[in-house]
Image 1 (cartoon, rainbow, N blue to C red):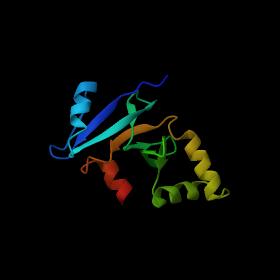
Image 2 (cartoon, helix red, strand yellow):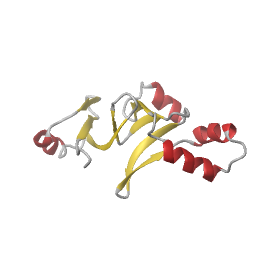
Image 3 (cartoon, one colour):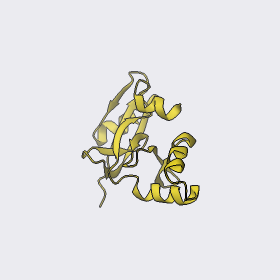
Image 4 (cartoon, one colour):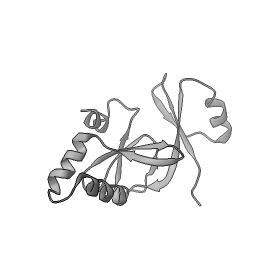
Length: 127
């Protein structure tokens, strides 16, 4: 069974918190708090992967983790997909996406999250 835990980003103090359940319930009421759920997965270094994390997979593709329509999903920019297409010229974009989705967390590393604007990973994804 997956461990259920959360982290909270405070938009005012620009800081991340890992609250207990009681504190989470209190913070959830505040509009400046952004709650992110743990995916149940860990990166190659044993670091927990949460929604809105930015990860680099074993192929060097950068993904952002989201929780959409009841499940965790990942998304990459068209720039990142172009890098994958150049590496695998004989495959279609759909084939590449399926391969990348299948292996995205195997050997991946959390390199930041969407809330830290100074993070190189955020700048790379938005470029």
